Image (cartoon, rainbow, N blue to C red):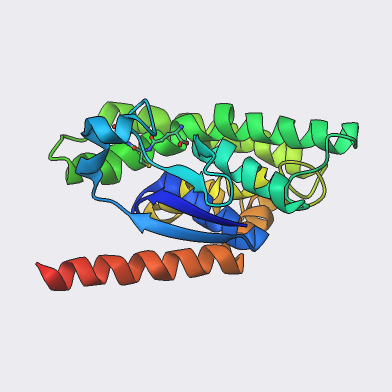
Amino acid sequence: MSYTLHGSILSTCTARVVASGATIGADIKLENHDFHAIHEAAWAKNQPFNQMPYLVDNTTSFEIFESRAICKYIANKAGSDLLPKQSDAEAYGRFEQGCSIEQSNFDPAASGLAFQLVFAKMFGLETDVKLVEKLKGDLTKKLQGYERLLSKQKFVGGDKLTLADIFHLPYGSIVAQLGVVPSLTDGSLPHVKAWWDTISSLPAWKEYEQQKAAAMAAMGAAK
Ligand SMILES: N[C@@H](CCC(=O)N[C@@H](CS)C(=O)NCC(=O)O)C(=O)O
């Protein structure tokens, strides 16, 4: 089984698939595209919303987009424990609960902060300072819910590491590096800190961060 992932090493949603795929042990070749490519008509044939990434299954030519769906597809084909089996109703239920938590309680504020504080500048846009303050407050409050959850179970999708945890890494790492929501890392929410320390030190994530740093250094050197 081999896959071609069309995206960019600099894209957070591509990072979600790269890190999940590496943790699963899947054979994924990342084809790096310039961000301008997604606005071309040819791209919309593969990703109708002009976003990256999308994946091609090289064995069957099946194509799929939406980073979380891509990760679940790869994990399902590999029979990976990162995706609990539907036949185990409770484990699968907890896992889907964890995926929904990430998408509804973490991603809106974390991706909003990353956009306002990192990507807006790259696109020549002004940072909306009022919105940043609101998003910081939103995520701080949500993390209190994470603390309550993680005092009862070790990971967001149950007692074992699942894709639901890995899904947090791309935007969570940006928030952690910016230091704008201290309770993610400062130990004031001890279960959150222990969880974050564990998932952010997964070898696949460290490897992704090294690849991204190397790509950024190469881009800087080419300027
Ligand atoms: N829900 C989609 C979001 C994809 C997405 O927003 N990708 C970003 C790059 S990380 C993108 O293509 N942004 C360009 C745009 O939305 O115009 C996924 O998870 O794949």
